[in-house]
Image 1 (cartoon, rainbow, N blue to C red):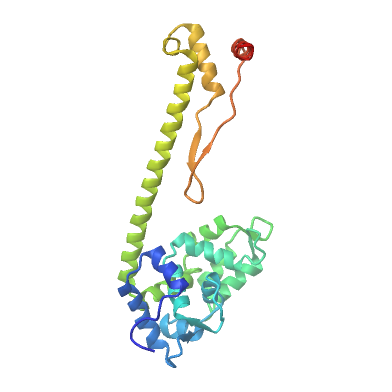
Image 2 (image 1 turned 90 degrees about the horizontal axis):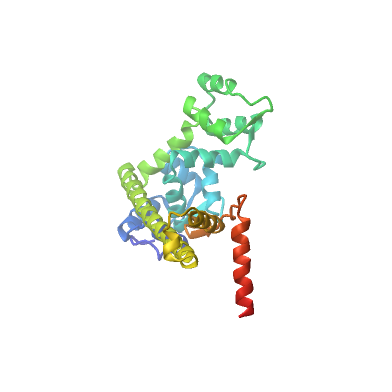
Length: 292
């Protein structure tokens, strides 16, 4: 295969767009991949990826990285799978690595890891043997008396005994160091963080503008119904009427959903004792309109 990267497939295109990778970046990934594609077949074996590139033994945890991106072959990976898999795992934050680890070994997907699943996790990561301090950490775990271990406890385990999960983070460190270099990934993470923050600021601005528009529309409607003079009047009857109309049209909740779209939720009206006088007036107005 030549020095130039192959035509970008769908995986590379999506990763390029998500991470804003340049042609030079793709060429950097290709340089590493091509070096270890010794048969020039456009693929490298999983063993080559982990042992030769990442300098780590292949295990269930590492395989799960490529399961995450749904690779077509469990023995070999193509260039697009290489780029997508590396960019996915290398960009994980500490919390992402913890959640990923928990998900892999929560075999029943019930939100808990039991003792057997935790033992499997530790033995998978520590293929060279479990050290004495790790055994002490495992014995100190409180399984809440039911033999189960939730994600919060899993995170606390990492905080108190970081050596237990260290191999998972070491794999990420080795991957970054040997593919593009640690500094490149630091810059990319900082860039992506700034991009996300800019995006969130823009979305928050959009949310506030929609909130202000809805509040303005609601207040205009109440002023129109009461009349400007009555709306701003300090007379008790007018103040009570205004309070009633505001409670019947409570301020909307404007929020961003999981897809980062602005959504609006209208709370239920709030009724109080004494509202009957205003409800009667509203009914009289409706009757008058029908007669006309």
